[in-house]
Length: 101
Image (cartoon, rainbow, N blue to C red; front, side, top):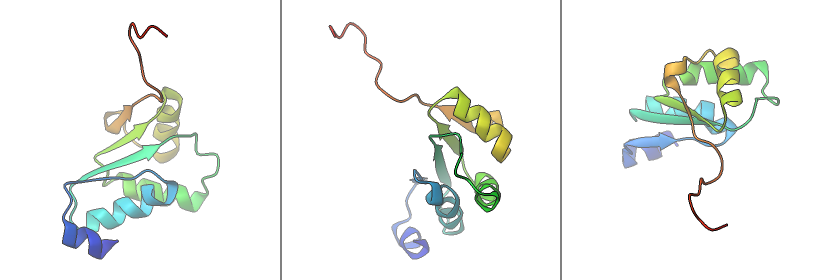
């Protein structure tokens, strides 16, 4: 992954899966990627202490952490020590206006 990022030189890396939220962010940053977006979609029930330590390290490099609810955002703030300025909430689903449904 490191070699790929060094060669491809992406402007942004957006991680989506649990392992990539930690390791992918760290590796991308070490490879020189500047814009790093990490994603959380649950309350972290399956995270171990080791997972949380890795996420805390990776969060230092993340440009922002996307969550799918305010509850998840609050949990990330509490569990992973992410500042509210780094958090963004994008809700699941699509808002429709006058769709006739």
